[in-house]
Length: 217
Image (tube, rainbow, N blue to C red; front, top):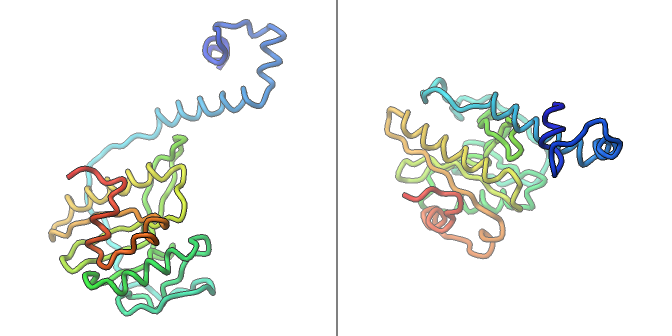
């Protein structure tokens, strides 16, 4: 740490750590934050690595889930969902319920379900700051052609959204490659402003127009 303080924290470098001006600058909050962020990023780079192969170790079967309670909030009773109520999150600004209503009406959607925390489907990912965290997408959608879509809906963009979408894209690629029955997994990111301004009529048109974070095919 002394080497970092002496040779990397200040410009020009190196500095004398016994110098009164340097000691005073080291006591400032900005210096402490730079030191913390730099060491955290370096430690994460050494300890968080992607490794191994892809295989299916288990499945989440929605039809086998036990009944569970949700908070008392507005909901949609959808015939295409296995859950009798699709309850929107309090911070979604109504987007989740609007999107659920779209899925219920879309003629090419065979079934859908909200990914409640009780379902247990979440992904590990590396945040923008380098920390390891988990991410829970919003919806599962199965279209008439048998494709399973993982959908993320957002009212406003978050700092870690690119990292989440990159991880979700990789998961879909890995799951498709490991699936023995030929099921294809894809994802789509739906932002509230575009969804409300350009409301699609089918899921196919939504997938064709909401292409942010998609890899070129």
